[in-house]
Length: 221
Length: 221
DNA sequence: ACCCTACAATTGTCTAACAAGTACACTTGT
DNA sequence: ACAAGTGTACTTGTTAGACAATTGTAGGGT
Image (cartoon, rainbow over all chains, first blue to last red; front, side, top):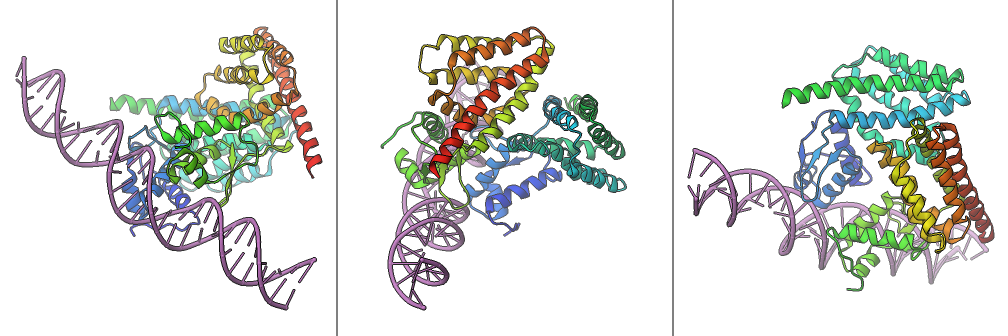
């Protein structure tokens, strides 16, 4: 048994481990993952590996066509823009509504405190609290299905954030500061100000990452 | 072979047929679907039936816990409100943005024309064009992932609409008229008017259906 | 009447295998 | 030498049968 994971459901454990390795950059984009290979490496049956792959495909972390080998998702500038526009669409309306009742989610506040506490650590250390911050905003809506929709986006969002942070495209302190502004506008009961701050925050990351990807694509071709 | 479906992927075909039967009311809420039973009825292996079930669970048309038999989703008043609030949240922002550029999607217009053409038919006949209408609005945003998020809601939305229409809770002519108002407000470049009309449209259906479900729940207990 | 145990049913996972489709290299013809 | 067609190896799709683990239920004991 080459690798080992602890779990209730074997499929969950393998899917979770693959997810972790993709987020960690262990598996770079375009890496092929054949069912037999995975099955051998985790010492499970092929149907089990297959199910884990299908779960990650549903999360958009892997992509594959019929009868083709699954590969780790390759994010192009186009996809990044699509992802960030979808986020902005959803999140800006969320903060607008939160600002209308001037209700700042505690979870969002504490997530940003956590970011500030990690400013001296590597840039990748703030990815988790950053995701927590935005998730907390959406969850504060109190609508299960809205949270579920947002969660379906999170896998790809995380891929984007991993690249942004590992390329050091953004200063962590600036991220924390922009978050603070958003919370402050919500607390002030300023819907348009909060939505604008959030749009700017996302647009900032979006264009830096998209430009970077377009540059790389140019180099490669 | 008791039942037969034509398809490229057997799993897709079975999942699609089950979906159809659930929408048609052939499988009422709470109906248990065991893997072995399904496998026998479609004359396929159990893993194939299992995969089809998992697909519908991902669509929220079935629900099941670990080691428990999958059942056709039971919609309570609480879920209906959650679904319709999520719709309103997403769609109201969509029409607000469409109204800002006064751009009325052709597909939405023709979908509503189709509803008007079916007013003399049974109430269930307008379900398809009604879904098309709302989908057309969201697709007009031109954002793939926003459309994908909305699509993840559609399975449950359809369950709701099937109940609304089969219980004859709403007049088809009124639905068409409310749709027309939404399009008219978009064309007029009136964001708040369009969003308000859409909110009212959804709130109307939401409260009628939720009240009906609460009445039934009361009777049953 | 209530609790506990044992059994039946169902799901989770595995091994083994064959069919079908894809991709790439190789051969053949020009 | 180059282009096109063929063939083979690899991978996925699906099946069959089996066993372990868990859940729900029915029956027996107190």
